[in-house]
Image (tube, rainbow, N blue to C red; front, side, top):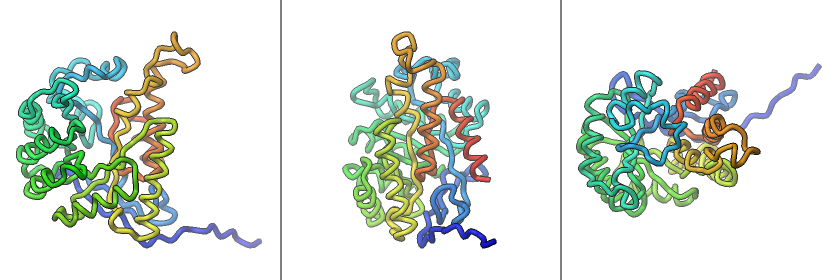
Length: 315
C-alpha cells in the first residue's frame, strides 16, 4: 500500500518577535515561520495571548452582562486591574483611555495619565495603553504615557499615519512598543510600518493593528486582509509585514446590537445572557486563526473558552 504524502506549504519568511513588559512577567509574541497553529508545516514558538481590557473611567457603555463580573471595582481602575490579574489570571492588560474622548467625557489628558501611572506602579503584568481614537488627544496622551511608564516596555496605540511623528519619538526614548494601526488594508499597513522604521522605531518594537470587525461581513473582510498580511510576510517574504498582530475583539462585539438585544424583542436570537459571550468567543477564535498574536477581550467566560482553545490547539 502506497503511503499518502500530504502536501505542505514551504514558508520563506518569519514573523518578528516582540516582547511586552519586563522581568518574569514579560510576554513575547510572534516568531512563527508558518500560519498560526500550522505547526505541522513550521514552528510557532510563542503562543497567542489574550489581553483583558479595562478603562480609565466607569464604562457606562458596557452592557450589564459585562459589568457584572467587575461590578465591585468598576469605579477604581487600579482595583479593576488587580482583579483581572489575581482573580481571572490576566497575563496582559489593555487600558483604554476612554475618558479623554472629545465625543464623550472629554476629561483632561492628565487625569487619565494619572490612572495609568497608578496602575503601572501596582501591577506587574505587561500593559497596552490605548487612546480614544482621536488623533490629537492620542498624540498628547501616548507621549505622556511613555514618560510615566519609563522602563516598563509598554505598548502604545493606536499610532496612525497622522500622529506617528508625535508619538514615535516618545516611544523610542522610553524604549516602548508602538502599535501601528491602519483601516483594514494591506498596503496601508505596510506603508505605516515603513514610515515607522524609517523614523527610527526598532523592528522589534512594532505591533500591527489591522483593525477588527465583528461577526458578519466585518469579520470576513478582516479575516481576508489579515490572511493576506500573513501570506505576504511568510510566503512572499515581505519583511515589512512580518510583525505580530493585535486585534480588539471585545469592544467590537459588545457594541453590536446583536450581542445584547433582549430575547423578548428578538426571540430568534436566543438567550442574551449567552449570545454575546458566544459571539466574542467565535470572533476571537477566528482572529487567532487569521493570524492574531494578541486578542483584546472583555468577558471572563469568553476569555476562559478562548484560552482553552489556544491551549488545546497549540499542543
